[in-house]
Image: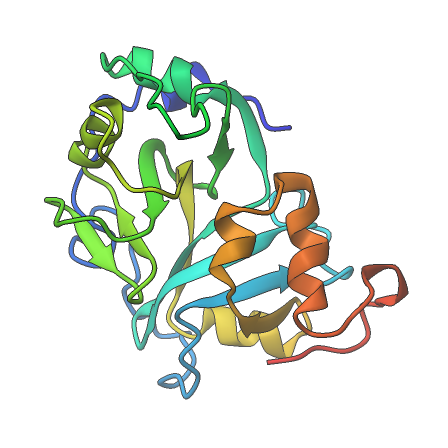
Length: 225
């Protein structure tokens, strides 16, 4: 479990949508960048291979929200912090009410979405109206960074399914493709049920099963893109 730092927990307000503002993530090209991408892995899971020994990304599943010639952006969906949603709502001065007929949200953990912009909140959710800083990924999933999505949740009429992270994961142009070629990640079309319904500790195995792979038999010698 990741501990949410004091700085990270005080998100204050959610800001512009990733992909519409470069202050969210620098995806600018560099002289060392790879050529323009041929893959489009939006709405895919990135599943860390055993060779991924990085303490941040080892054992993770990332849902990719944006992937273009400038780079890629996603959020880790299986790494909890020590903060729960009721604590988060209290810190942004919202009262989270229980809604009849819906499972209580307050005790659910806030996740660690990645090492980029860790002081900022990212809400992955089923589309529900239009929020001021919402990026529609698919017809079933959107990513919002504005506080208004949590205001609707607090009022009891927000998205039916959601996941809240602190921070996101980002790659500059060509970087993700290079990591895939080096067998850092497996890739597979995402299943919303794994994001929103499967327990956090089971999401890695569930994502691997989409590829027909038993994680206990996996080695770091091969990749899938």
